[in-house]
Length: 490
Image 1 (cartoon, one colour):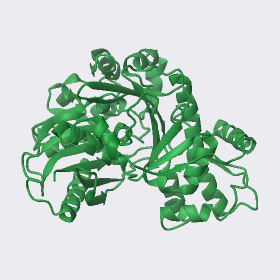
Image 2 (tube, rainbow, N blue to C red; image 1 turned 30 degrees about the vertical axis):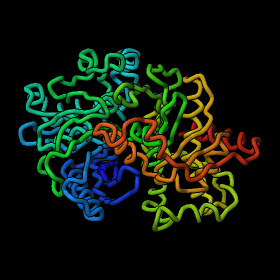
Image 3 (cartoon, rainbow, N blue to C red; image 1 turned 90 degrees about the vertical axis):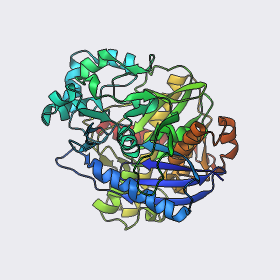
Image 4 (cartoon, rainbow, N blue to C red; image 1 turned 180 degrees about the vertical axis):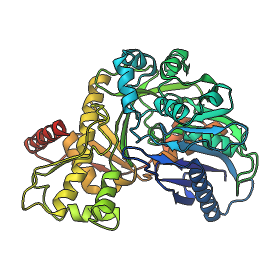
């Protein structure tokens, strides 16, 4: 029996799964790492702490799996995408803390680039709006504020999203590469040519000498060397950004298939087939994956805050001690009592793209309780997604039939039923909610020959539950109207 290791490096921690070729979990490991907030609106990670979380979770998963040295066929890697890492090519040492996708320090730089008239050209080439969410302005900020530009232009430094940094470490420094899905995220990639754009690099002030090679999402990118607990020579055979990996792990292989991952944020992707679809509604056009014989694109909408809003109730307001407790608290009241929570703690993402927006709570009365706020927070997570999916339907020219869901908050039945009701479409929840890691495993398995086709993958994907709309439509419309009014105040 061959096994695939999936490394899912996320915003707050790293999960490692060991799966056999029939998708039975054989081992699992998880390690959190610190979040650094040096100033309001700034979010940083220490790349060494990220690497420590990977090796720790990997060791835990391998210990549970009890595999022999020849039992691992491949490693797949998926990652938080827009977080920017700079390191020395020669030593592999980071030269600055990573600037995380949530970080808003470059908002003024993005505004200046937009004011200079670059937004339309950037969206035409890269499929992305100019926003602090993406990596290019983060890289330029590090080069200019940490005195690193001369070293970057001399070729001494390497840039990558987190996948590139981990691939460099996993291969003992031998490989500096990324896959097309991650490459399509830093604002300097030409979607049509599938290559870095000199024009975009010039706009954002990013030296080409920093950049990784671009490879397909499935296929051998390198081999392990010096990784604790892993034999040298194991192929790293699959890479995708976390949301593209989840789309693949949900077997959303046909145009029009869509998924929502509820993690720190909420991320919705729709497969649009073999050609990029330009958004007219404030969405992102991105590469979904490139596997043997196929290139797929997607439309994407991101809500920056989802599970993080539950963490805020837990850690900031002390509503409960475990995030899982929110469902019982929220279901203790029949509705949110007219309270609306807009969780725009780090601005509003798609389709609004308002980095200046801040969280709003409306409808408070003397009778409002913790339970009403908890329920309204869950509803706010779902209502953000309505805005995104309606925009997605307009751009794709087709109505959503079923939304596949995954991520930790997808286990919350109250949230899933409310999401189903306000969208008016069925929700499909899989047996394995960790579909981001599953997608990385599928890609690596394809790249190493463990699975021979997407059909073989689709055959092993299994649904756990389907939610169907039950709410009165007039009540839903009233709720949506309250939401729109609250968003206008954010």
